[in-house]
Length: 117
Image 1 (cartoon, rainbow, N blue to C red):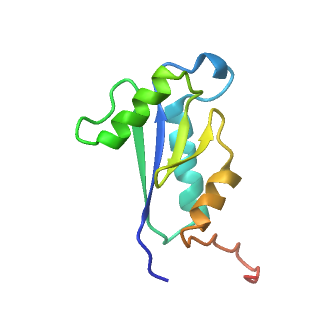
Image 2 (cartoon, rainbow, N blue to C red):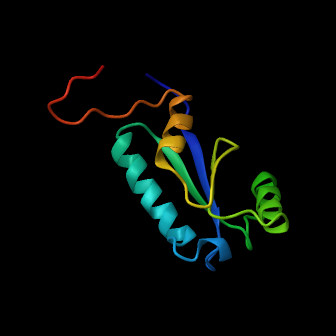
């Protein structure tokens, strides 16, 4: 199956969200999420991007606007966005992110020895 690689953005900051003191940092969440998704969807390309909400990329208006919204409206970060759709805020759930990816044609790999359904 050929499809356009999707972009998954994790918006966060170096400072841990006040509501998330016991949770991993946004960067740690980004790294964990990327590793988990690459294991779950091997050989299925996607782009992972980390956006610092206090220093968003100057050349991407959509990312700048969402980062500004996150700051101004006190969203709980990290915020995970798949192809422009917010799918997680705060402590992201892998299941919700995978469900969104699968809407774009991604299929999880099957563990060794198990038949695909």
